[in-house]
Length: 419
Image (cartoon, rainbow, N blue to C red; front, side):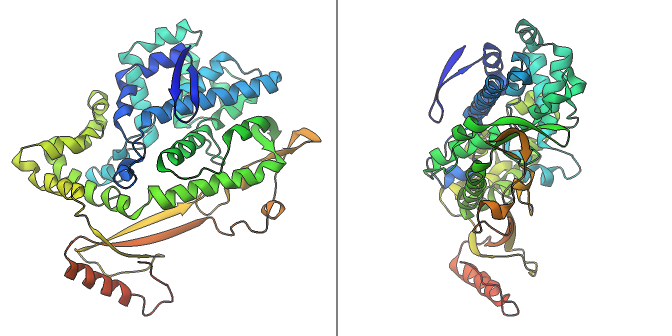
């Protein structure tokens, strides 16, 4: 075992196979990808990277499974199971978001697809199959299982040498059913730590009460009925971070479809940024360094992109004219609209509807808890959209003209703009 000193989780131990994976160029690239992207331009503490987040996810996945194994030996959770779930810890790159759909609109570029391609490349280039077999993994069963955990295309565990009773393994790292997973636990704790925001959710408390119960013929991870409020705190903390940090106005301007995308799109014809997804060797080298590469380049063809990035550093960025719930606006080349979606993780749905609990008197029976049983003060809606209007011109005259146009658009509505 190797010990890592993590600022969020303290001293953590990881299996030697995980260390072998961490010590590959494909995983080490995550050191150079900011977890919060352009959030670092807004929050000075948001300098953490996907590298430490991924290590944290692997650690928490192991802790959850070890806790379940100790509490319920009948689940027959093996070391193989734990390792496979922990290996599902590689995450995506900022170009998977707004840049790629604009640079290559015909290319299907999903985060999961890229993760599978990168995983295959990492295993092949570093001869990891022999390392896996060294630690008793059965590669013909476990490699497809790990890929299924990443891509979640076939979640029938019986296809990977495991019984149907182990279906809960798919809910550990990326829980598509209700969003309660160790990936979220780590990024909530880590983001709050670096942003200086209070984290109201205690994932260690969740571990104290977690157990596997059966519901509708499937084994699910449940918790005590009294913990429902703690989980609502988790979803609210997620919403709060997205509202305050992930979708901060300045971060939105710089990263989401505006300044950086403009700069990268203009540079793409010369640097072939968007082509990197076709070649994993090249993609391994594609990190946040692309910002510095363009900024420090002397090439004349990158002059326009370089100018945009220089404006970021000098804070000469687009101005936010205002924000509002969605409404129709006239097209204007000097004005950009950015639609922000905020929710509890499942758009309009309450994710807690897909979470099950058990009572102290009957720990093996999975039950659902209605919202009103928790509190009458919980939200009625779980999804909202905000339209932000940006002016691409920085001079005050243009900004004021855009603001007046924005204000006038409300004369026939009852919506109240925020400035």
